Length: 237
Image 1: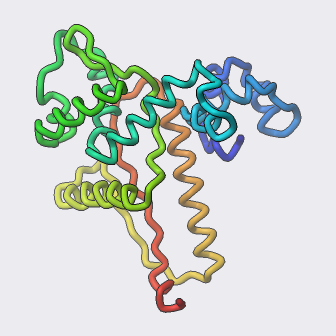
Image 2 (image 1 turned 135 degrees about the vertical axis):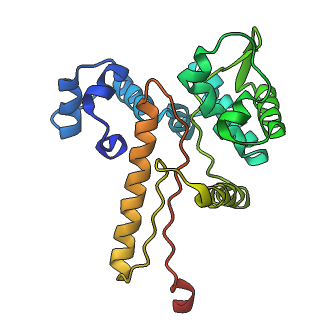
């Protein structure tokens, strides 16, 4: 539970779980055990993906309260495979800037925010509407369920997504702003330290996911790429 939380403050998570921060600290220290329902709320508060855990344990149809979110997550995953920018469009719909805007949606406004072409915005919105991930009301778009999704799965499709977001970062590096963070290191490491470095990145990834799950309000969309490539692995066979 503590690993999933990462560095997110207990005081931020506790209200989302519906318990005091003192009770939550006792769970994380191993001084007390949460009830099953409290544990489920904790998973949802820190990952936004309770439906994935439940679906791994029992047929999701047996938990109707999570079925709509599970189906929306699958629809989001399928849309991301077909048009990667759908993930970014979802994140924009979560921002306070978009939610506060009055009047009907202006075609191209999300494209301008993300600096993409209008046809990419149109395609993303169409796929998300078709999948039931978003709804349209009074000319405005909004999420019909939590937009968090895990796109791990078919290796070829995942590789295509990785390539898309790596290319997005590559294109932006030429005119990066002070807010952008780029860094690399070519390091000589032992095999054990390569494993340790990989775990550091995995831990960072989990912490960022926890930050995203507990962020309110949302006012930015950020692309985070993490890579670790053992360059001599093929030579070792």
